[in-house]
Length: 277
Image 1: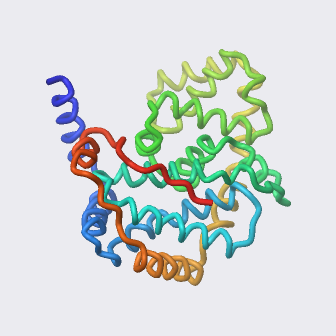
Image 2: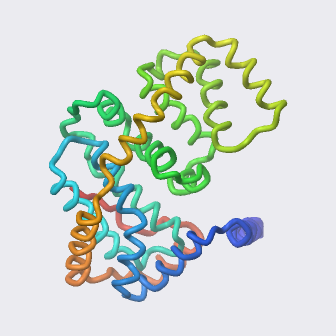
């Protein structure tokens, strides 16, 4: 009974907090699950930029290789599409495929120090940071996709910002970490004046945290450049979509068992793990 009530609360929460973009994405997903290739391409196009940014900020490789890998990821996701019940399930499979891709074992050299630092982040932290900071995913979306609580996500984002500013997360004291996490949480919403004053007092107790925050504000323009560096051009985007269309035309969708579909309506756990080289 408690699980049923929790599922109902989540359902009504999605109805009342859904954006037009999320509603459109769900409609595209439903059509794609029926085998509509054009609707699947429209769905995939919303995520191509994030995949390109993740691959580009993971290792140094030719743009053609990165584009081919992007196409391969979406072809593989097409094959597993009928396991998906919700748009967040599709995003979970996409995130898992990127995190498990093994890209962290490749060359990370770059003429840009910031890009090297991003490539040195762990895959999970890198995905969380890129999705939230560069692709503007709300914290609740990223937390849902990574299957973690928002507090844990803020810890990951605080760790990423700390490392990108040239400070080792491991070197920070517990109080400094808590302060950075509070700053990360404050970036996700507009706290009231009382909260801001309390946060300012907390920052004042930790000089290194104040220094990290200052460095972070200075990095913002560079992050904009990093985001645009790996965004595909219209021509590249057309090539990627063409590769996806050619791939899904030859790749049949897997048919999950009825029990798998029933389980996935409650908890998305019955799936094949996707690894893309």
